[in-house]
Length: 227
Ligand SMILES: N[C@@H](CCC(=O)N[C@@H](CS)C(=O)NCC(=O)O)C(=O)O
Image (cartoon, rainbow, N blue to C red; front, side, top):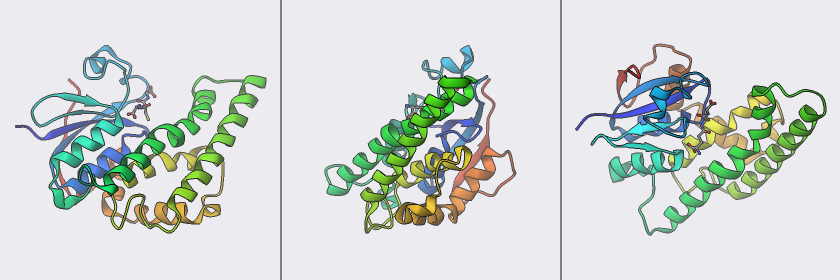
């Protein structure tokens, strides 16, 4: 058995939550840095994930798993049950976890898609205006929905953080890039965001993305090259 290996995308991709979840898991793991869009779309990386996206993960028994939801579930199942990264299958918390993760991975993630598309494809004129208006509207709606989903809760699922909270942060920070809204207008969402920002695993993941030398509070076993 080898350590889990996570292929994470930079800059500031949605792999962020998987790095945080690995830190929280206590599992030994390595990281492989994948530059977007150049390396993620290369033939070498498509041998790992034919879709050409990050995150991807090599499991301890050598299989490749892609898609954030599958990766976060894998980490949760491999970690000690006491980590509570993913609630026990069959529990009410498990249903809530999947509900939150699906919302984040579809509605919340996709809300930002027109804004990224406009930027990455250099849209101009009316096309730019249309994509920007659509993206800004979708981001506001997704934040309002998440604020309602969070009502009365400190964490997305229950009394404790789960892998869904880690994934949330990796997407929510995209607002800082596109400057759509003031997060403080969504108090429960903002409180979750700030609580997570203070977490040592989150600070570690930010440092890793920025290529800094940072101390793991989990069982990080270093970087490896794609080759
Ligand atoms: N459905 C996938 C989406 C993954 C995805 O879109 N990843 C982006 C980064 S957040 C990516 O790799 N994009 C390739 C690129 O930017 O060239 C998942 O949930 O993991």
